[in-house]
Length: 71
Figure 1 (tube, rainbow, N blue to C red):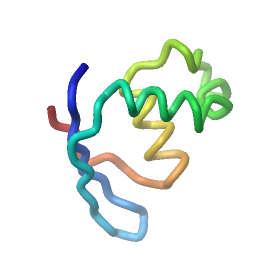
Figure 2: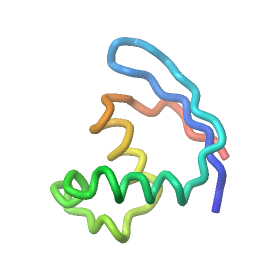
Figure 3: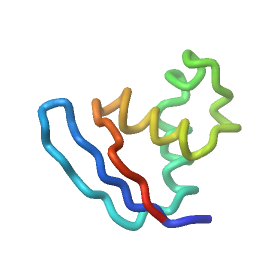
């Protein structure tokens, strides 16, 4: 799987860079932490991709908005 670097901004204006995340690790983390949120959004937590995982972990859960994802 791919290794991703993420640039995100918190609603308060703080920008952070998270480097070298394995795509599969992010998906697993979202499945573990945010399975109920994913179900509420109409997703099968066991069948999500990286886009749904990032949305669940960063946008909804922690109030981060993704600015850029690079491989």
